[in-house]
Image 1 (cartoon, helix red, strand yellow):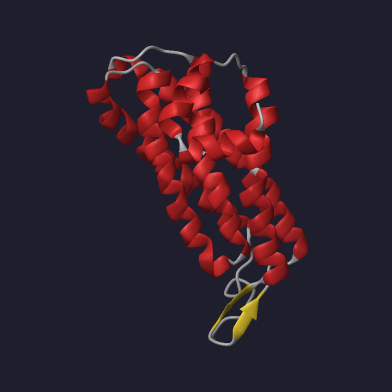
Image 2 (image 1 turned 30 degrees about the vertical axis):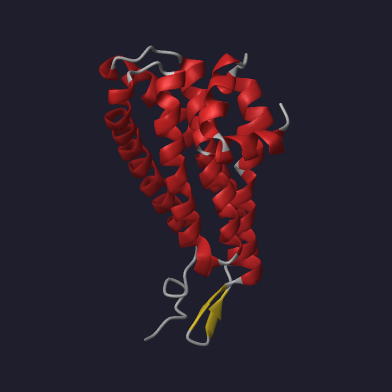
Length: 198
């Protein structure tokens, strides 16, 4: 599998690509080593550069996260991203019978790994902290990828794909807020450092 070609195919031709993904032999180690671990570096490294090298600025005031805190943020964010893909795969697999699908741990992992592509690629916008919210919007395309992939990889009926997608999305949102909270604890802010007003 060519990484760049797969990223392009899953983003631009998902309906054609999901059956190809379903037919491919894969295991957890190969999916992580050849895809997830590489793409998850994009938002992690971009966040480090954006927060610690470029910095955050507004109204004539700029702030850079100290390098050590930025590195800690990068490593923890990266590890949490890897864990999030796996956790969502476990949830997706466990929920399959509820939506008349077929349980498949590797199918669920393929689904969450490849559906996460839009969010990982959109993470490049973290280079400019003021644009990082747009990276979050790019991740919304992953919801559509998930919706298209559920009937193919988890074998759920088409009419069950939407509610199945909603349940997985809610779990992803909860996980995303948890990740953001953990990262916020590690990232110094001007207010916590006594540099803010007052």
